[in-house]
Image (cartoon, rainbow, N blue to C red; front, top):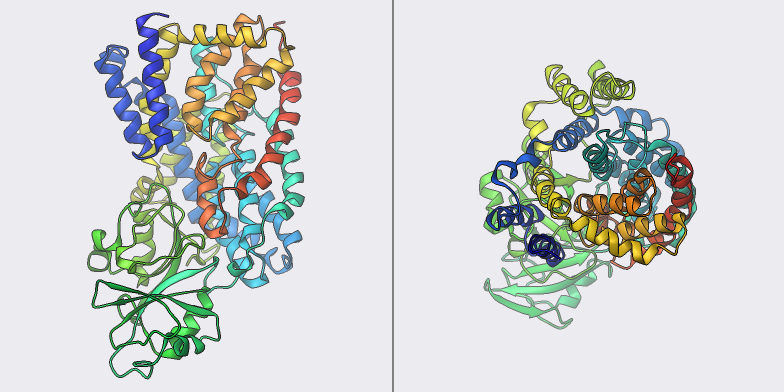
Length: 587
């Protein structure tokens, strides 16, 4: 092993360890790794920023903007509106929602498709009494398997296409993934329509204070004012007003003193009570007892909205007090839910985490834009007039036109999607500000920084070295078994690394392995793409899985209940299909 190979493997190993450590944002980790690669001479200075000019960055960014434009248009809600009255049971709701997310994920980014359908699912859950836990995880998994059908459905497909272009001079086309992807998606859809029964039913989540979702428990903060009838009485007496639906979790007195909520604890004026319960029960309790809810006083212009904090939100790791939300934005935090865990701090001091669900109040005109800026996904009914004008269908029509141009090889993918974004802006289906907000800049930074780093594995000969080791391990296996090994390896690495990083590192290695075995590299690249896109075992490997964790009330182990059998289906269906559609032996 040469010095350059040692440096390349060390750099990638440390980068992977930093991703797993998860103490720094992944884009910061990637930028730091790029700087280190330049400093130690692995990456030439004139190629250090070549990743940021790569077509993949344009394609992913454009796909995000187009997904957001379709979400804002209301076209999906218009299509769903005739079906909603008939979706009265979980057995009816799951196939429609899963199918809708799957189909939309074929033509847009999967996280965008999931975000469009989540409010619809949560409204159905509230109206029908269905636990959101039965709906949201199947939808998240459907968004992943739908994304494997086309080039732009998921980032791994785009990256694998780039790897193939670098190796052979010809990228994969828009629908080259479809023969395998459609069969995998159909098999996954059939399983999800029945497999939702494997998930836990957390019944506290289908009722809400006029919201589109609920969870196991909310924690909200209320104050006991001077002269209140409960002053001098016990906690047990106050809780009796809630009919055993609400519990006083903690008492905060004189700002810093915290007392456990014993039943015989006597209350004093100006005590701050942290209340725990289901959202609708909390609302009734506060109204019945006359407690003063934390936050700014409601006005005629005030609106209340629930949302889930996404992984790249400015709230993650910070408190409302640090951000000074109420003064700067007029936004008050009314309640928070953390997958059933008790919150024992004042809401202004809670350090938020990705997946937390919050209830916020503010001026109606400012609330939605503020949530967008904070990257908090709204879960209540969106205030849009469905089909308000003929422009509601424009983003979908523009996207369809772009895909047709790519399918018939009129223009390259990057040019088609860039042109589609320009058309959306010119036709005012989306403002420039909304477009910038829709782009997940950390993802683009991650891609731009990792591309030069991943290339060091090939330029130093490291890919040949690893491929040689893998060859010795699989040389006694059949070609199909070797292909399956690559797919399983990609599935195993993705939850701990990142699907983009997995493909950038594993793609060239898989191609080298195919070459050493005397086999066609295309099926091995397809296996990497499919494996990296199908992370069903953890909530951390893909943002779609993280997004539903809080609203669904899921725990870490819940994902394997549904994800393990689905992963086996992908392997059993995907491996022979890839070998059939993309012959292993060179012809």
